[in-house]
Length: 104
Image (spheres, rainbow, N blue to C red):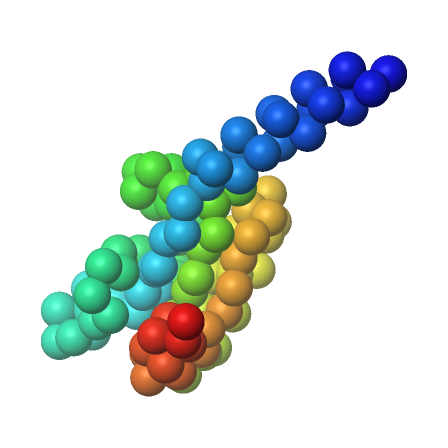
């Protein structure tokens, strides 16, 4: 029994190590082109369910979402949760997300 628990713990640890943090700007492409958080990828909130797999984002990755005010990122977060994404966070506006991402 101890060996099984140890193996499961090691396997879960390996999955966590493979998971990555992804910052997604869910505004339109035009809004994104006018300015965005460095390193953020752009997937419009209205098509996030269809486009998330093309961005190579896994369901266990930490997904941070932001938009102009937080409303569209909330819609995107709900869509991702329905698809089985387990680690989503709505950081609200781009300004708020910038602040939260800079914290140590």
